[in-house]
Image 1: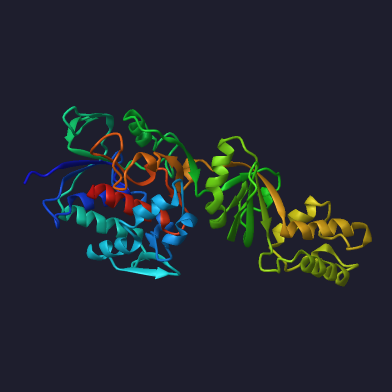
Image 2 (image 1 turned 45 degrees about the horizontal axis):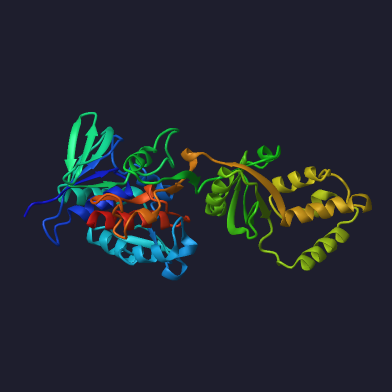
Length: 415
């Protein structure tokens, strides 16, 4: 039996999974697979995922809630794709390759707690399947061949493949100017590319007070408002305040909306509730505030606001409202004090930009799913496949983006 020769451009998570799936000999001869990687080694981005622990999937995944996890494509389309290779399939495959896993609240990690385990397991499997890996491979161009297959021109010569998988990743987490190759290849082959934007990243905000808040971590509830949109995006969790704005998981979760809106010239505002554990009722909160003001009447602002939130936040809000910690609570400043209490529950900040690609975990944008089949094959060129971040699918934190890499890579590899 003649084996197909499959070329995979990109040695990240989706590319490595595609190689494993394509070379698998259990259901036939398997493809002869060659991975073309631009960097000096494969899987570098895997090593930094999940703060070096690699949250490779999530057991909370539900087909009914898929729209809560993923963006960029219709829910029904995504359900059809994930029904072909699900998180359960991911765990079975990694288990078969010899990796033990553990989960915490649905978040799945290698038992070792090291992302390097995930990469090692994939590398060992590629060795077993005799997958060829070419690192530091610079690609000059890609051309469809008239009688089928693809010609890949590299600086070191030309390579011919029966089918080609583009798994080049995105600019996320890379140096300025890097990571755009995949989009260039896709456009050269006639595919549309939705302009990529940084996602899962921090937001840079207006204001001259951020340096005084840098380093503060606190529980918070956040809402993101975009001009022209009636609904807002809501998140809650540990907020990290930086010298330029807001960060942390809840900010990452809705940063893709801010990123896309700012790229269109829309106004974006975040509103922070620093006291999310208190009752939502405005009347109950105002009653509590008035009782506290009355109890501390004649004493200092420092006493009045002691213990509510991090002291740096209080000092910032006092200054914003023309007050000092040593000022005495009295009738003259009662309205200003009320404004501080109001800011604690609803502090508005104007978002002026998002952190650049180099600080983002993933990107929004890429080749739309409408231009590939459920097997990840191009609708324009037979034998051309796409996988991973190169496609216009991005997700929340929590292992969902890596699951997309495993799913799209596996399906592209199986073809």
